[in-house]
Amino acid sequence: MIPCTWPTALFFLIWLCNDVVSKRNHTLKPRVVLPENYVKEMRPPARKGQPVIVEFSIYVVDVNSINVEDMDFRVDMFIRQTWSESRLQLPEDIFEEGDDHVTLPPEFFDNLWHPDPYFLNSKVTEIAELTHKFSSVTLYRNQTVRYSARMHAIIACQMEFQLYPMDIQSCPIYIESFSYSNQKVRFRWSEAGVTINPELKLLQYHIGEPLRLEETNGYMIDKDGNYSRLVVYFRFERQIGHHLIQTFAPSSLVVMLSWFSFWLDLDAIPGRVTLLVTCMLTLVTMFTGLRADIPPVAYVKALDLWMAGCMMFVFAALGEFVVVKVLDKQYQMNKTKAQESMPRIIPVRLNGEKGSCGTLAAWEGSGVRCRKVDLTSPTSPPAATPAVHPAPGATHTTAHLVGVERRQSILQVAWLDADTGQERVLWREIDKLSRVVFPALFLLFVTMYWPVLLLKTKTSS
Image (cartoon, rainbow, N blue to C red; front, top):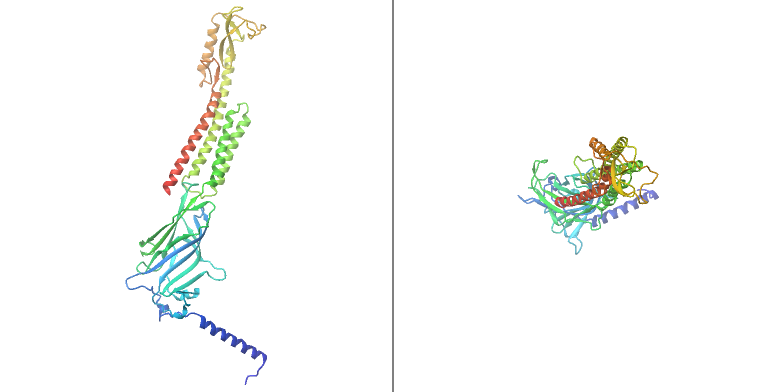
């Protein structure tokens, strides 16, 4: 006889409670009878000569981390697989009154035959879990099995950036059976297909609608056979608003800022050079930061063309300054040589008497400007200026020297306007012309760039 002590009584009480709880759980737990040798065979529940039809549906909860450097994206989703298991024996007592299905714990899924789909182009695939895995098995009265799980997957996507930053990425997900050929298992999209969370919002992209679904049963080289495959294409359209504010608008303003140099005189050399060099460095810094957002691809992108166009306009403005500075130097040299070869007594009165209207020859720049003046008027040259009558032929000699000097110059850096008789300098005319030509050419570049880019974007979509 066992002595009745308090440790013995406590042990007996604990054993009794565990036995009662165990019997209660055994009574409430649904019992699903599996056929004999079910686990050993693990064959698809297909009729002879007909494959098992497995229907798929996906509900996309979130799409994030669209990584253009690694060319992949992360997707959180609920997947559902449904197929018919004719070998199950389902007693009526496992269903509650009025229900046509029962939900079993995930452990029951390991004892069932189930298809073996996998994501062909996934880098990482895992079932989400917190305290346990988020998956369940549902059995229906008509012997249909539905498996549901929440999954995280990192999907590889071969992205193209020719139209960046207005590129449209088409990223597929390939779902395929790993072991069973299409003679044993065949995948199909259910009526629900693929659904996207209506509250889903991306930072730089917009998920285009509708999604394209495909079903194929072709030959798979990797497994050397005919296998069933499901494909869903996600269409990511990059939003242009960010780049309009951060890229296109600032770069356009910098190009326009470089045009201010055409209104600065050549005497303001430090200000003009500083303005142009600062604009060039600003563009280089801006586009260097943009290149860090995308991988260094081997082909030309749309953004590269815009960058090259803006830098070309600023560089052309800098080159225009160098040209006009060289022309100004040539102009000053010609002016100095002409002054040394001209008579020193200027101005002179030619063919005129006191009180008559004669011709006044005056030196301006590198040429001679002749105009008729009234020598008796108050606006005539001061009386203190000696009026000298040169020898006959002086006017012809002066014009001949100026002409010789003009012909010796490689460029005609200055000339007399036939209408006004005023001297016109080449570098000043180039500056005036640049104030119109540069904005017109930039406007032409913009009107050609955007229509072509938009047309190619619509064509690729």
